[in-house]
Length: 476
Ligand code: 4AD
Ligand code: MG
Image 1 (cartoon, rainbow, N blue to C red):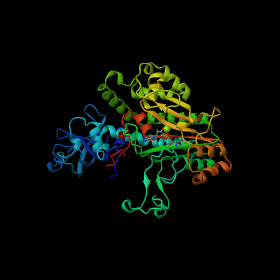
Image 2: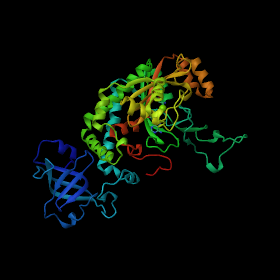
Image 3: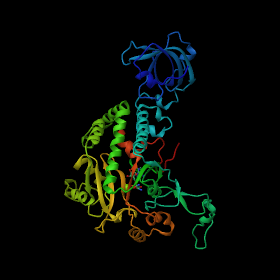
Image 4: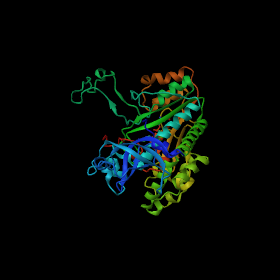
């Protein structure tokens, strides 16, 4: 018989029908009651086996084993479930040695421990919920853009350009490390390399997305992004996924509206479609917060936080206003910040979190950053000091979105590239857009894992991507 998903059985009002269910045993009680999970939803189906089931089968029904059950869905007599499956036949698909199975542990394993067994952690309730939510978020993002007529553009992963100019790139090469060919001046001769030039893993698809926007008007990318920054924090990955819309004819205000709409849409979509997972994660967060000192606990439970963000307009302030708020803050006056505050600084996460968590208590969009701390492509404001940049700061996360209106004026752009020592000749293809029918345009990058962190209430970015890549860690 064709397999029925556990989710469909639990969602179905009916009973007294035949099914085949397959999954992994979560627990086995009294040699009679199996809690079976197939990952289609949080819930397990209770399978009741008859007391005369063959001993050779019964002994293999252990936590972690995979089984197939033919039986009948019946109204449950026991408490805790509406329906259960009365088994006719049970087939063991794969045994599981309980002595060796890491998830057999009776106590709830810590997230740190589960990170070490990331190949098995999908099978826990927490990671089941996290990755179902991650899936829904990805789908909702595509749906948001598709519904608005954007073209999904695949930008290259191997590239010769450094969009952000931060020099945090992983090199891609086929040259032998111990015997690389050299030029006369001692530098590596990349002409002999696979691509005939130096290449790296992309830090952003933005520059290529801009080329697409100059034809389709609205495009977005959604792909893997790599940064070799050595920041071993709970918010940084060396390999993460980024969503980068780029829109012709948009200015910085349209850009803010688009980003705010996107975040609200995907939160709303997930609240609608993953209620059970989110409620589980909300409870997990409550339990986790109980372990923390009072002053470190978040003010709002997860569901309330998501509803709140959905229903309230994001605060919009300029960088200059943000700095003034920080300078006026009790935290600054009492010297609570580790890093100093003055106009021109690249705000540290303690500053960003003060603004969103203590001062505004909601997401904040900051615009008009000093040009010195932002990338070359951002549109220069008339004051000569700031650029039309925007960062969205989210409670508990800090920066979740970074973007800007782009410099569409060829002379201003080449002048800025010159000032920042960016070789204009190599970027001729980018500059061509400014020569051939340039238009005002704007875009942003949303860090996908930071979005997943925000929606799931998880606190470490390593727990929202299946197999995290971080400094000294590329297991699995
Ligand atoms: O602010 P960033 O560096 O912006 C760009 O790359 C632009 N090219 C985007 C654009 O305008 N099209 O990165 C964008 C977002 C950040 O706000 C953050 O959410 C995420 O990407 N991000 C990271 N997420 C996880 N690990 C890292 N190491 C990240 N670096 C950036
Ligand atoms: Mg940024």
